[in-house]
Amino acid sequence: MQRMIRLARAVVEIMVSEYDTRFVLQKLADPFWFQAFGCLLGFDWHSSGLTTTVCAALKAAFQTAGSDFPLYACGGKGSRSRRTPEEIAAACDALGVDADPLIYASRMAAKIDNAALQDGFQIYHHCFFFDRTGLWAVVQQGMARENDPLGRPNAGFARRYHWVADKVGDWTIRPEAAICSEKTAPLVVDTIAKEARPMQQDVTRLLTEEQREVQKILKDLPHLRLTPRHRILLSDIDPRRISRILLSTYDDPPETFASLIGRRGIGPATIRALALTAEIIYGHGPSYRDPARFSFAHGGKDGTPYPVRRDVYDETISILNSLVSRARVDQSEKRRAFRRLAVFTTISSAESQRHSVNRTTSETTRL
Image 1 (cartoon, one colour):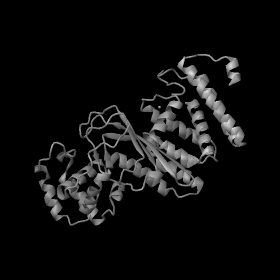
Image 2 (cartoon, rainbow, N blue to C red; image 1 turned 90 degrees about the vertical axis):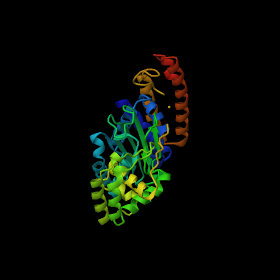
Image 3 (cartoon, helix red, strand yellow; image 1 turned 180 degrees about the vertical axis):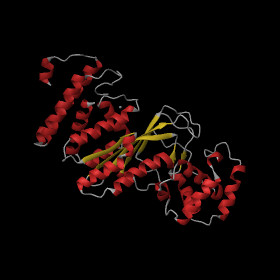
Image 4 (cartoon, rainbow, N blue to C red; image 1 turned 60 degrees about the vertical axis):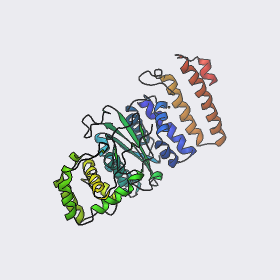
C-alpha cells in the first residue's frame, strides 16, 4: 500500500505539471483510465477492491503531498463515505472557499445513483475529488444486495459510477460520466434517463396539484393488474405513506425533479412509488433500460497475470519522482526523462512477460 501511495502521488504530480488539475479530474471520471491506473498500481483488474484501494491510495497521496498540492480527496468506504461533507468543509475552510456547492454535488451524486437510479446496487463507497477552483469528480461503487427488493440475481457483484463536474449539465438527465459494470441488471428503474423526462415532469406536477383525485386513485392501486414487463410492483406502494408524502410536498412543492431527489427522507422506495403513481395517472413511466457499460504494468496482488515485481515497482517510483523533480527545472530535461521512462516501460514489459526475477547491474546502469 505504501508503494501504491508513492506511485500514485508521482503519477498525479506529473499529470498536474504537464497539464492541470482539470485533466486529472477528467481522467478519474474515465472508467477505462481508472481501471488501467489501478492495474499500474498493481491491483486486481477484476476485483471490486480496485476501486476502494486506488481511491484510498490517492487520498493518502494527496494528503502527504504537502499543503501546496492542488488536489483534495474526501470520503471513502463505509463509514468514511458518510464523513465526506465534514472533510469537504474542513478542506474548504483551510482554503477559504465556499464548501456548500461541493457538499451539494457530493450528496446529489450519491443520492442519484442510490435512489433515482435503482439498479440493485447499494452505494457503499464514495470518494469526492476536487481542486481549488471548485472543479470536482466522484468515484463511487455499489454492491448488489443479498435481499434485493425486486429479486435481482446479481448478489456479490459490484459496479462503479464515475462523475465529473464538466459533464453535469442537468442533474436529472444521465449526469454521470460513466457507469461501469461486469454484468447488466435484469430489472432497472431509471428515473434520470433521457426518456424519463416526461415522467419527471409528471411527478413534479403530481406533487403540486390538489390531492383529492390522487387520493382516490391511490385507494384503487392494490386492485390494478400490471403487465409482466413492469419493473415497479404494486407491493412498492403503501397508499397511506404516499398520501403523507403528497400532503407534505403539497405544502412545500419541489420546483424540479432534482430538488425532489435532493430532499432528505426521499429514498428509493418513495421515488419508485411516485414514478408508478405518475405513470398510472399521466401515462409516462421511467426507463427500464440498464445504463451501465463495461487494462498490467507491475502484476497483480493475486498473481494474475503474474505476481507484483516489487523491484520493478520501486524503480518506477524512483524514475517518476525524478521526472517530477526535473519537470520543475527544464523542458528539455523533462522530454529526455520521458524518453527514458518509455525505454524503461518497454524493457520492463518484456522482462515481465519472461517472468524474469532478477535484473543485472549492467541492465540497471544502462537504463
